[in-house]
Length: 205
Image (cartoon, rainbow, N blue to C red; front, side, top):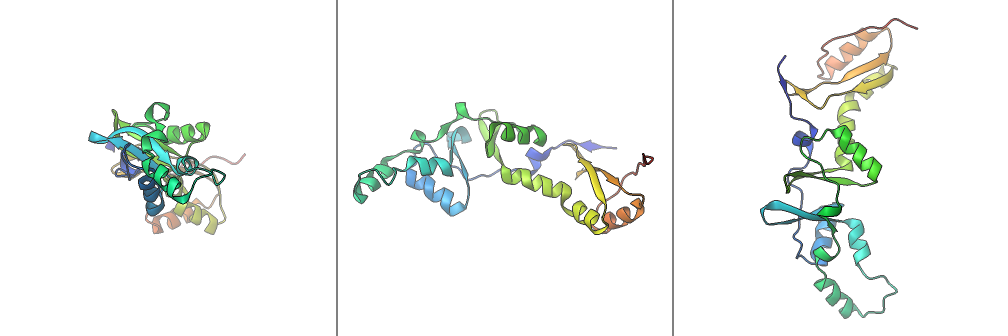
């Protein structure tokens, strides 16, 4: 069988994330994060070279607290002069991945380091961005219809395993379920547009 390796990062991540330059102002960064409804804003220079990232948390922390004794005019002036480069997280401090990183590795990195996104780099250039939303989308893709089918038939899922590669342009998932009525499962999955490639049966213990 012909196998076309593409992987989740190359196929599913946002290849055109909203970005900003390091010389942009605090107000520009805040407006982009607010208006675009995003939490992570990659900072790039010419040729799409990544130099850092700004998050919604960085925006909140960069603004003076209410206890700061400044007039509205002074506050506006200071924030207008505040450049992204002064409050972004520099690239050297970021954890990044490549387009060929397995999604399982990316999720593990986010979990272990308690971060919400991973810039995806090809060389030093921004290829895209992998976020918590992408990770959830992957889980929905794996479990979505299958979970509904199993719930409808009142069948327990023991495990779901999926490789990172594509087979003839499609993702394969191996489901292990606890039932003797597997034929009903096949019928329901095929109704949903899934192709059942093979069935293996294990004796009851």
